[in-house]
Length: 217
Image (tube, rainbow, N blue to C red; front, side, top):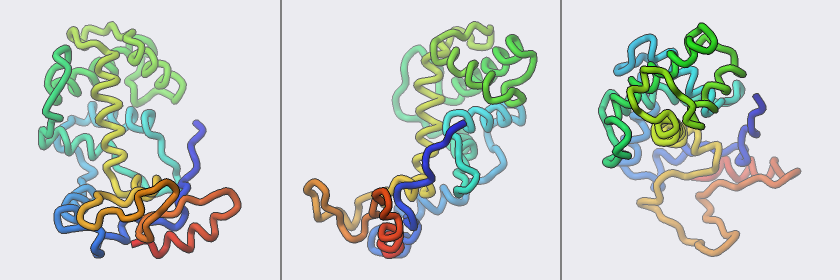
């Protein structure tokens, strides 16, 4: 699988802002909790956990030379705490039920087509199964009437991508500084940057961007 460049913001580490005026205590507490998330599942059982890890690797593949974001663990933490979004499509069951049903159905589809659980498949058949799910081509009894297409868009993409981009390692990759509160922004016009923001490297100018980003606080 071809992965994107590691970052367009070389040398930038959003965690350098932790003890500065860029973040307040509320932000620090939230980020500390995300960094300390357990690698052992609190909600999913062992079979579901293996399927979820494989699913996360397909949806948000990570470079081996980058700090690894514990995406599956963040999803598990959300479900363990039962932190729902406050809304849902009426065709979907509640958050926890949707995930249990969806992972069971994914494994059932995998066994039906390839005689192996999803986590044991290679990359190509895994992607084929996810494309079928995305297209609504899920027919295993385990779906129990839940549309596979809706589960893919409203739970798989929403929860997995949301977990990935909630983590400070992802923020560093995309040059995000975290919540604007309490510092805010001053230079609001096009192509202007506050000195505490990350610098995006242009081709051939990575060295200067790296130097400036090491001072972004």
